[in-house]
Image 1 (cartoon, rainbow, N blue to C red):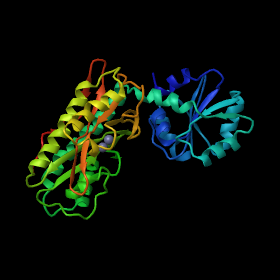
Image 2 (image 1 turned 120 degrees about the horizontal axis):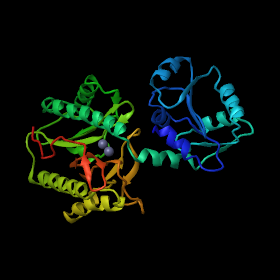
Image 3 (image 1 turned 45 degrees about the horizontal axis):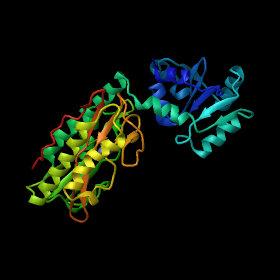
Image 4 (image 1 turned 120 degrees about the vertical axis):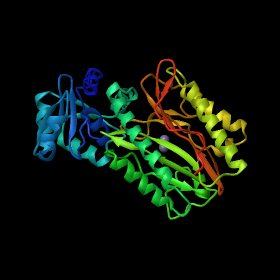
Length: 355
Ligand code: ZN
Ligand code: ZN
């Protein structure tokens, strides 16, 4: 069953339709990339409305929905609202701008636009990846690992962080990625203590840790991975920090399974880092969901409350230790949650690589 059909079935009483405008949710429902268009889901129809530029390709790609071409979205939408007798339409909160909301409400005078419901419905659907969706994430991860394998010989003293980031992006895109999953992080030496540092003109030197956080996009589905490598050998302290992060990462991976509280997934990694005395230097959550967005539900965070993992979710496991002004280490894999455990989707080695 296509996600849009599940959404159709789950429209709550009192709502006649759902209107999806955000790029990522539209793509999730249609499987089709476009800069324009909306998805309208009523109790008995699923429609993708788009314009002349996209309609031919959309009719070829979009499954389980009728593709409707519009000249004027306003006219098409209001006539559909009349035909289907739509009085209350659910709209997105996070994915819809104030301007879009204003435009839609002017297009549909007399129709109630109701927020606060649709994000939850879509979020629940997106939480569980179908086998086809998981296959896309696997493809994205395979391209990411291709990039990792091929960037290693490129990393040497004298290269800048920016050169490494660009080369990595080139490798992954040339190999077939639709795009990169996000702006890559490549940080070296003292910069590696910045969890989300931007690659710059810093030259990689002997003794540096180089942390690379990168991923690919395939048909709208993302991958996310981080590796820290050593250039020219490392100190005992660097080794100790690396080993601690790796131990924490393995500890979290070993407990993930359907039904686990997200806070316990986080705590599994965090307690290893705390016991080693580095608790103050692990300032972010252990992981996040990955799908049509690079960061989505569920979160492996101390702030995840009562939330539990469900089978079919894909989460990252990415503890780190960041010693300000000195160096940092992060190791990130993606795992697919199963009833009894998880499958690690990231196959690249995690033992410290010394280049
Ligand atoms: Zn990442
Ligand atoms: Zn991540």
